[in-house]
Image 1 (cartoon, rainbow, N blue to C red):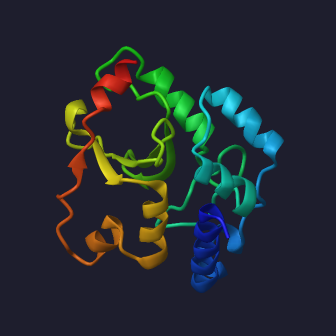
Image 2 (tube, rainbow, N blue to C red; image 1 turned 180 degrees about the vertical axis):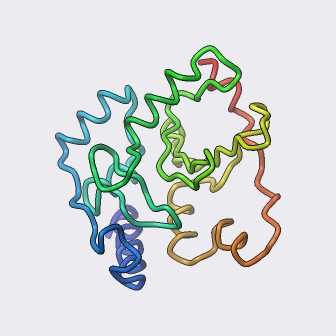
Length: 186
């Protein structure tokens, strides 16, 4: 079994364990075809990280995961979609101090303007937390997990910062993402 297949199997086991009441409309949205993903990548102007591609192609078009759940890549059951949100953030904030970094795809909204994002330009698919609420664009990006594999492991095992926060633990130890300003300018 490949690493991607193993991660997808772990995610499937977690989704099964949570049961249909934890899913949007009680079920998973159908996965996307290669063609649909290719069209999404064309619109984005960036290739998805291989694991993210596998999730949308082999598992589901979002609708599972922690809290507000993974956003649909394209049209789907969630209010926000990855493609539309990324393109909106890139265009609305272009040329400002809040410019959205190229290749950083929002995959899950935490509410209040916060997003979990995958850096599709990093080999590991670093997962970043965008937290704009303190109002400082230079302190709005944090490293959530060094890799998308690790982020999904946190979801599967209930070890993410979001679980610690719900349990009343201090989660102020996320490291700032040092590439934020440079990547937003590029």
